[in-house]
Length: 370
Image (cartoon, rainbow, N blue to C red):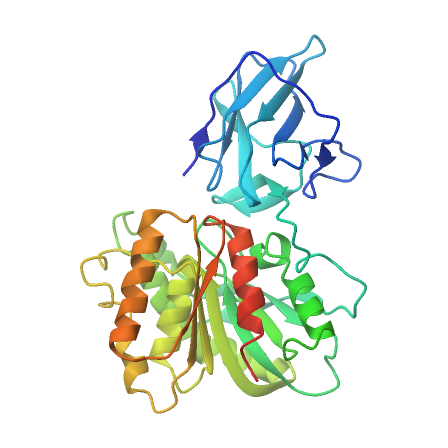
C-alpha cells in the first residue's frame, strides 16, 4: 500500500544529516539524521508537481517540498520509522524513482529504497570470512520453463558437506530480495564468525510458479495458492534433487520465508515434515479464500501427527498491520491449543519490511541445524 504525503511550503536542512546507505556511490542524497528525519533532492526541472510516496512504515510521514531556481526539488520529512522503506516520486502524475538511490525489486518493479538506522550492526559487512552468492538455474518440467535461483555458499564451503536452508521472498519481490534488501550474506557471515550458528547453504528460490496457461487465468483466481502448490512440487521433485546433486550437502534441510514466502514455507514444511528439521514463518499471512478457514489450504494439522516434529519459528514486527497481527494470533493460538512446540519472536518497533525479516533470519539461523 502506498502513502501520499502532505506538502508544505517551508523546510529546514540540519547540519547533522548523513547520506543514506542506499544512496548510489558519489551521491549525497537521500540523507537522514538522528531523529530519523529524511531529506531528498531530485532534479526534475520541467516538472510542475512532485509528490513523495512510499510503502509500509511510511504511511504517517509528513513532508515539506520546495523547488529552487535550478530545477531541484527539495523534500524534507517528519521522522520515519526504523528499517528499510520503498519509496518513489509522483512527477506530474507519473511514478518515478529517485535517481540518487540504488534500485531494489519491490512492488513488482525496480524501486528506490531508504534505510533508517536502527542502531544495529548485525547485518553490516564486517572484517570476517565471507561466503558468496552465486546465480544458478534449473529447468522445471512442472512449469515448463527455466527457474533462476541464488545460492549462498558459506565461508567454509569445500571443506565438508553442509545443511541447506530453502528461503523465499515476499509478494512483489524476487530472488534478489534476500541478497540486496535482506543483507543475507552479512547476517550469516557475522553469525558464523561469532560461532552463533552452524554454517549452511542457502537457496533463494523464486516465489512464483505458474504455467503459461495458469498465467492467463483471471485475477480473481486463487493464483497464490496454486502457485504455492506448484512450488511445493518443484521443491520436492526438482529443486532439492538439483541442489543435492550439484552442491556439497549433508541431507539436513530447513525451509523459511517472509510474508507470502512464509505461507509457502509452512505449506511445504507441513506437507513434508519428514524432510525438514525446521520451518521459519516471518510475518505469516493467509491467502485467497482461506480467511474463514485459515488452515483449509495450509495443512498445519500434518505437523501435529508427524513422528519427528520440525522446529517451528514464527516472527512478526510489533507495528505490522492488524491483518498480520490477527493471523499471527490465530496461528499461535492453534499451535498452543494443540501443544505443538514453537518459538515466537517479535521484532520491536518494525513494520512489514526488511528490518523485521533480517531480525527474523538472524534469530532463526541461530536455532537450526544444531
